[in-house]
Amino acid sequence: MELALLHALATIYMTGLIWFVQVVHYPLKALVGPAQFSAYHEAHKARTAWVVGPPMLIEAASALWLAIDPPAGTGRLLPIAGLALLALTWIATARFSIRHHNTLSSGFDSSAHHLLVRTNWIRTALWTIRSFLALFLVYCISGS
Image 1 (tube, rainbow, N blue to C red):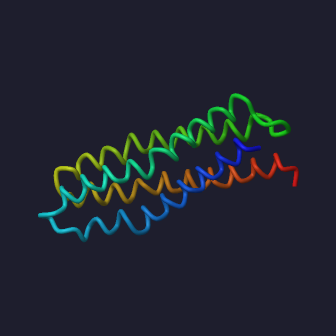
Image 2: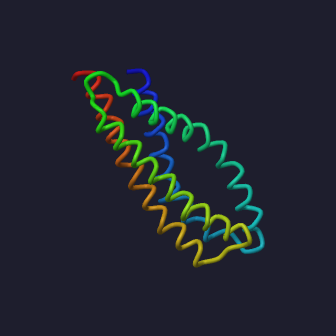
């Protein structure tokens, strides 16, 4: 139960964070002046790593553990589905987010910014679904 709860907390944290990033943070990048954008963006990347790194690692490790050794009474389907969705989230991060962030590191590019915001909806949706799955897993374990 403790592992599933830790997993749910990390997932919900990431879901809240990605919604903030999607609705507030990424769109506001367009308002940073061109002269300051590269420095701003590099600072953003460095600081963001500290905020997302630990919970993403906790989420990944606990998702893998839950898929390998599912809690009693839950079966494998829910943990494996959650792990698959997490893998898709990381793939979307590597395929889209990192690529567009790298382009923006050279300076503001409206096309890269638009694509960053647009493709981030994939991660937002995946993490939102994962939150519901993680909560449902905790619910199933609790027997309520």
